Image (cartoon, rainbow over all chains, first blue to last red; front, side, top):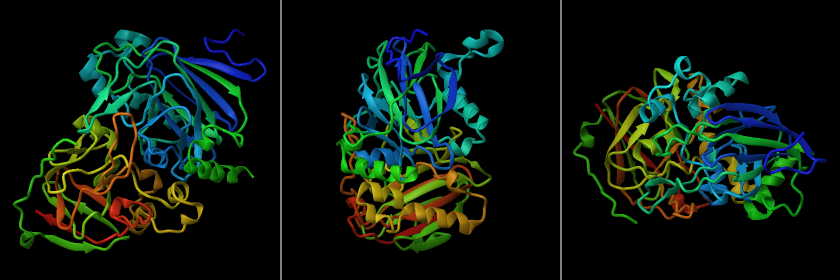
Length: 245
Length: 215
């Protein structure tokens, strides 16, 4: 089977899929698997939440991720921490350079206010889906729900903060073909929505498709770029590995 | 840094219906009714007060840092900031603030995050998340760890740089500074008066805060 625009070596390839712009997806990915995420047309936003598969009350924690690494955004070398001080997944390669952590998700109400009405009756599967709706639908499939809708990652989106604290969405950031590799460092339930970013000021609802390529990369080795990014991550990876000894 | 606008309150503590000093390292779970005003006073300066809110009638509606940021278009909280719920509704509004800047990105310290951030042997130290959890099981109201989300840190200064860096800076607070907020719905307020000893968020010296409520 031909792979999409950023292929991985055939001997490590597992599967590939595509989330149409606006749609949602969830799945279990095991430790040592990598997920290559690709913005297929330059306007992708991929809202993401992560849960420990065998104990989903352990989940991605935005503040713990940011303060452990003294960052407000994510790129190559960063780990995504759970609320239990373990690394759920980490970014081992990234052509985009910035992924948003603070913007949250679009809602049906914010979509309606920004883009106008577009329901299934009139628009069929081109209807305007929101990030909140997509994440919640996937969460409920796994026995989770509103209580698990915590601050999420928005891959492919860039939101900067000026000195006064004002938020600015960068519409020049997205490029067709931008991609990143997300390595799963635990067995993780991954929940995704490809709906637009809530702070995207563009008036048209036109989220790009997101390509998913899963491949076998193995766990982080001793020289790993994420493990060695800072002493905090060395401790985080150590604490994670205790689960698998 | 842009000039910070400070807003003082006309409310008189002598007329408060509730008045309590909360020592460092302790929790507080209390209903603030619609129309009531809650004041938190940083008695000795540079304390961090980790705070969450729930709709008292439906705990599945809770404080949302991301909805609050989106409503303001900005990351720092001060007078005029609306504290928004996970359903996009206003829970409270900050009506007075003599400190000028509060954080909602830094979250609450925990045993596990202390082990990652500082050293593996810091895990046994007391933490805000332990306080939150103790409040939840003492309350017996059905709240669990899943109900804990990104909180507000009153009096804490966590600047984000234009390049995307984040730091825990020295507090902008001082003895006697306060923040006041008026409830737009009945809210269950959960506070941990932060016991963190490993960073400057409370000047390495956790201290008491005073909690006042007016009708």
